[in-house]
Image (cartoon, rainbow, N blue to C red; front, side, top):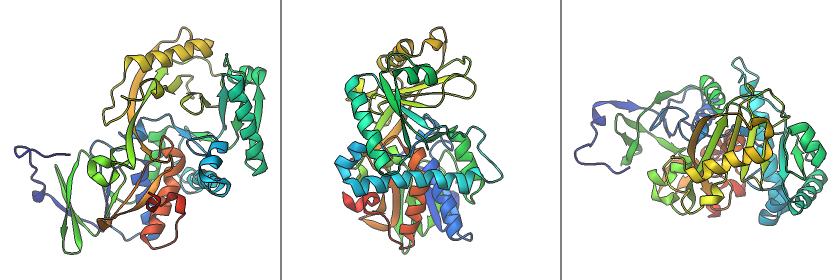
Amino acid sequence: MSVSYWLQNSSADRRVTADVCIVGAGIMGLSTAYWLNQEDPNLKVVVLEKGQMGTGATGRNAGFITCGSVEHFNRMVTKHGEKTALEIWQFAEHNMALLKSEILSKNVPVTSFQQRGAFSLAASQSEYDELKQVSRLMASHSIPVEELDEAAVRARLGAEGFVGGIKYLRDGEANPIELLRSIGSQSSFQLYENCEVQGVDVEGGDRIVRTNDVEVTCTLVIYCCNGYSAAVDNYFEDKVYPTRGQVMVLEPVAPFMEGPCYANFYLDYFRQLQDGSLLIGGFRQLESDTEKGFSDHTTEKIQEALHSFVRQHLPQYQKAKVSHRWAGVMGFSSDGEPMIGSLPTDSQIYFGAGFTGHGIGMAFHTAKTLVDLIFDRPIPDWLSAKRF
């Protein structure tokens, strides 16, 4: 952020020392704190958050825990090659396994977690034909997947107007804030909320992180800002793009949906929550030129498109009222995959960002890999920021 002369902070009056200062208290930030604790329980970790814990994309997403990436597997193969595409998919599957073994199986389980799989639905025959190709390609790599025809979609999901689809059998879902709190409760760190970073100064071997409230002296800084990364350092301006995603929730009806769903090549998505409410998001393609930047306001055009989708495809919610509308700022990377590394200008500032709408499905494992990088262990080339 820019700082007015009149509003310059007095953070020097409130000094804090730490080994590591993490900027951002979303799922990447708290997951990084968790894995640092696992590496060395004696590390003193401070987490700074410009709002409150989880008020960025983590607390504004749909709660899908996706075993995969931002695109169908066949398109991943075209983009990255078969070997790397499979590595990325397996990385996301391991993210789920780590969440279950490290967090969900412990004493503070996320009560809303379910692993019912997720569906990708086709409204046209051409998309369905591609999904069937995706299914066969995935099956050839032993990725569990199921094909559904139109009748099965209607019977198992209550959805109209789809000619078929496929089901990813290992996908999950959760209340993302419950998940974040569970990660945080099993980590050791000092959290400072409502502290927006104004700059980082160098003082010998230390880094001084200045905010509107506290000043943190530390050895290592880790930016976990995702969509807001370019606001803290211009290195990210051509690598991580702030992109708005909009969501709507409709009042509950009796549960009927087998699992969460994607449509229109992952651009649109919906799930029935445990209380019977319907959460639906997407349609940013309708205003692609303006759904960018750091604002999290909703727009009439996209909100109406979300409601229209419900009226067209989910007759059970025809009479349900809208209970919530919101938007969140995601961080889209140049190639759709997350990135970790250290700044070229300062090797004591690390980062993890660019989850492209799949942070819940990738960040816990990405944070573990970031800690590997910090402790000089090898990481996958596709995840390294050196690829840019």
